[in-house]
Length: 208
Length: 208
DNA sequence: AGCATAAGTTTCCTAAAGGAAACTTTATCC
DNA sequence: GGATAAAGTTTCCTTTAGGAAACTTATGCT
Image 1: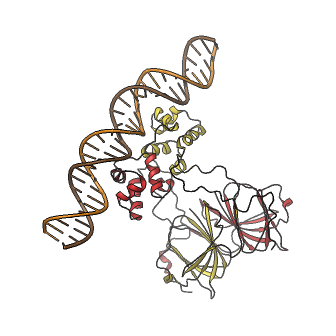
Image 2 (image 1 turned 90 degrees about the vertical axis):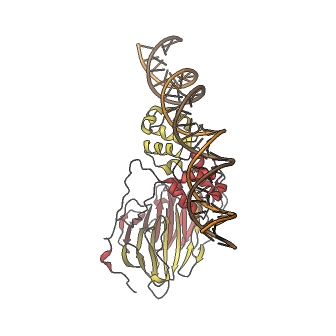
């Protein structure tokens, strides 16, 4: 494989960029809006028709001459098909701070229990949106757990090796083999058991 | 594997709970705000002092008698120490009922391109926090792409089969083989190339 | 209970947002 | 280049948001 990169210029491994909760911030909403409109290739007139706001009003908002009411913002978001948080969220650090963390096979942080053995991946980065794990499933039946597992967020699970039964509160158990995956709400009770001889290996990722 | 389902009591497969992009939606901002204020144990007067908005104004907003300007919303968010998206995001379906979606091996939705072949998993559920994919990497070098791939959110990637080079804007390329994984900010330019003879297979999950 | 006091609502005024049309700027065609 | 049309801005007027104070409703307290 070709290695196309003189590595002297790269920063060291992990840039743990943080965004402190700053004070009052003007928040250039107008500029933002204009960018969005332009990106759709719309004129003020067209945007006006889509949103139901007057051309003049849009102009003023874009030029930060007025502060739109929430009502207006809803019309905007609705008309331009972008959701409100997206439109009005903080400037969203444009300086695409690159964070990166590599975890070599078998080199995550392990947390063994009697039923599972979790290997947490990407341990170097904090404030992640997702938590990735590799887990060995030792449990062989529902009874190996006391009760349903239940917590906030959503979970994605892929079977890497072996075969498991996926139990969940509102559904019947389902058998998953290598390559199969599930996506589910983690606050619905759930639980895993290995079916095959050897312990099964799965990848799972959570996000709240 | 056995077919999974005597389906008498269980709901049918996927509860595609949907919140279709509805029309204009009132979006009970007032109610929301009131809850937040109460949860902090604040009176209107106290909230008034923290936000700099008049007691009367707060009352009217809470009772949906007026639609606050963006300016006012900023003061609110700022004074109450809650961020804007959180305050004004859609109602966030509280009834986090159990959703579940199983994707059998090879049965996702595929989107072939010259460089990748993406198989989107868990296609039944919408409004997910994460998007899981399985992808075959056809690209063999940086030049197979026009430019860096760059988009919002964070990404987690695990090599399922084969060997790849992971290129990224701020780091030197790194070689990943089966079982290795990376977690990174997706707005940092990135790109993948297969190293091995056969195309590599990876799992990746994005979240914004 | 009845008086206090604090929390919340309504009124009334003024300051600012939203819309229609006049005006200015920018692009396009001859 | 000048005429014409389209995009964008500003003006002027109407509607609505925001604030101060009056009013109403809940919560003590002896």
